Length: 306
Image (cartoon, rainbow, N blue to C red; front, side, top):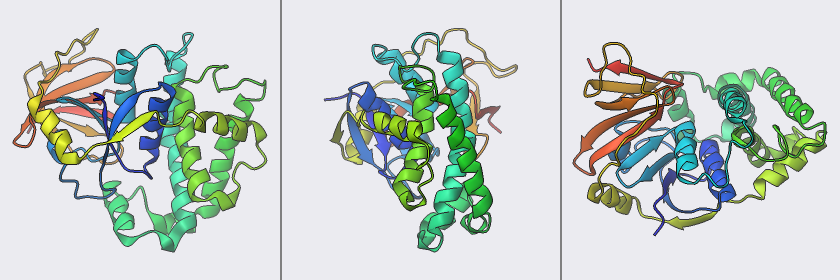
């Protein structure tokens, strides 16, 4: 039985990024299908309120956000690395730009192009979830500007490949490639009629190379079984290098953790550990018992509980 459980749904771009990484690393994993909109009754006991997709579970440890997920996958399965040849810092910086800038331009183009065909539940959920950042009516009005921004970013990708390299930082794929892939995947999959990159042969060839990694070896798992696995497991010991605890918030403090951009639902628990890359809190739920919930440090706010 594989230890890795990915809570995801097929159309999630960030889930596609992680699925592709699982394919690149050649891993077997369990796939739990979750709803694309709230409520998510079999996910909330694990995350404590965090509702973004995907979430990775290993026993009674829960990993939120793809940046946190990939760090754990690298720690456990370093052989096929996402950070070859000293690319860690640059790949991470490119990935952060892509996840926040390139991705939202792709979202605007896709949702704005599909417009009236977007189901009302998804339209309303994303507007509320993002506090108005994902506004399909505005995307329709601003479509010309959004497409021009998307094209600008796609040309940056084309130029990154112009010396014949296979991937953006050399001939080996890195975390940067996977972060650039999922906005492109969203555009190519949902609105192929736009031909957004049709005049960018290097980018299209890169996209095909990335797609060929596939999704590894997924095995479907019922959501209730994932909860049972958490309940019968114990959180793994936490050993973070270079601990960095905020002033006045020592380990053992009641805290909340929330994203700083969208999907800001706070998760409450007890601080276990933190450093420059990760925050770990302990929480308890009747459906799963004690779990450790892991977040990236960048992009999340750690606060004392009120």
